[in-house]
Length: 174
Image (cartoon, rainbow, N blue to C red; front, side, top):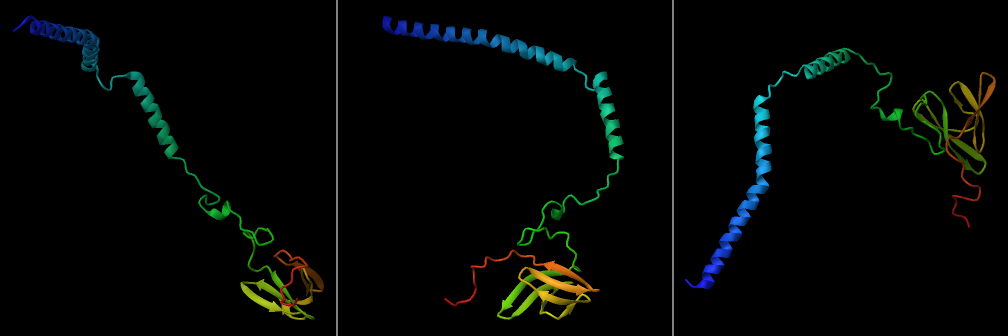
């Protein structure tokens, strides 16, 4: 071996020794902490903490009392109709309507004749002036509703859909 190779080997061995020493110095505190943690774990006895035991007993007793409560709901919280309200074309709520209530759905004007589309007790009726429904007689069919004479009292029943603009026509005449 010549001097050049010996010098390279000495430098390599010195660097190796230096890196091992530095790694040992750096890892010594970690190993010390590990040994202390192992000692604490060996000395630990599970279930002997009085304060923790008292807290757990308190929480268990409170849970038992809460489980004895009985709750009753007036309304079903999962029922969507209690949150979402359905409306007709006029924007009026229809969720609480009775089926026995008479509703004017549409009015058809055909020259001199007028027809009223009425929904009553789940039936769709097409009536003209003079027809009877619900123990009363239809006296007049107007553009925005129907007048019903029942027990000698006139009752106006408004149409449930919004009225169309007068300028809009459905005929094909031009």
